[in-house]
Amino acid sequence: MNTRWIAPAAMGAAGFAVLVGLGIWQTQRLTWKEAILERIDREIAEVPIALPDRPVETRHNYLSVRAEGRLSPGHLRVLTSIRGVGPGHRIIAPFQTEDRRIMLDLGFLPDGARLPEPPGWLRVHGNLHWPDEHDRWFTPEPDAELWFARQVDRMAGVLETEPVMLVVSQTDPTPIALIPLPVDSSDIANDHFQYAVTWFSLATVWLAMTAYWLRKLATAPPDDAKVKSS
Image (cartoon, rainbow, N blue to C red):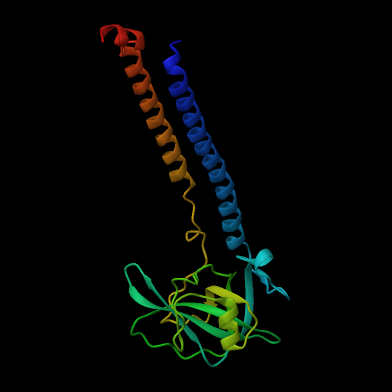
């Protein structure tokens, strides 16, 4: 092999190996994330159980639960929108069971709609959730009852409840003006397939560039021929 090829070929092989390795790593991450999403979807769809005594995010996020009680006075609004419906608010309200006081995410109230009067005794099914929506750099601070992200701990302090949020999927009776926004896994980022495609594409481009470079070296006159011609 012409010694002029050694450095370009080594650099091309190393770069190609690194890029392919990153692509393989992202495919492994994709398998890992899909397994997590599948587990979360199973948990969301499970038969509801009684509210745990001391639910915590690390163990009970997405847990399917049921509860009975009454809505207490006061609520918070979280600005959001639904495609095809328009802007509105999530309604977060305190919920008093026989011995607990937690928060309910009752769902979506379209902009301009009137919040219905709270029913008496209410049975709810849904999922415990600790949303990851707040960004300390970009999320505005709450303005009175209007919030821009669901912050479980801070909202619990305002509504004087446990730091527990139950996102309602079904109620009995049903507040007609509210549209349930049940928990699902669609808001969990899973971009590993796109990342893998990007890395494998870059590896292909790198390989093509390396081949072009080596071909140019192969067709270039040797250095001693340049010296003689001069």
